[in-house]
Image (tube, rainbow, N blue to C red; front, top):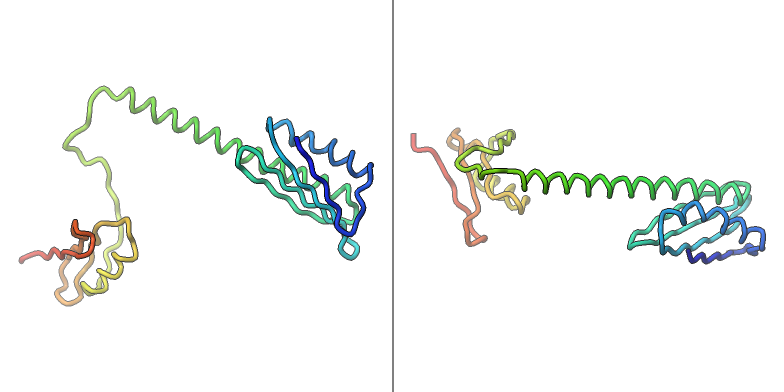
Length: 174
């Protein structure tokens, strides 16, 4: 692991350097190739340690302050280790879930056709067709909107036409 230690208004002594390198071994075990930027500084009576670790395209960052610089570094390491563990667990869970989905798809013996596969429930609000069009414009992924027409009191559906610029309105006859 490449470690760059910078002191702002504070001299980086050999003791601090050795301490940071020793503590970074806890982070190093998670990555094969990582870089760390450690910045230490003093503000009033507080010693502030900021550690940024970049590895595998991910960035982890922790900033803490304490009266003791070593305690601040320890807190940063604890925070970083928690962030890294959380991210790794999340990635592993996503990989596990995606492999399960692939297995489920592969094991499906036949295609399901002509069945209702998904049901969505939502509230139908009374509004004018113009308001419904504006509401549909706010939701670019939604293709239609069901609403109660204030003018007629009947359930209507407004939908985007294939040209992507215009809208259609479906009203019941009776």
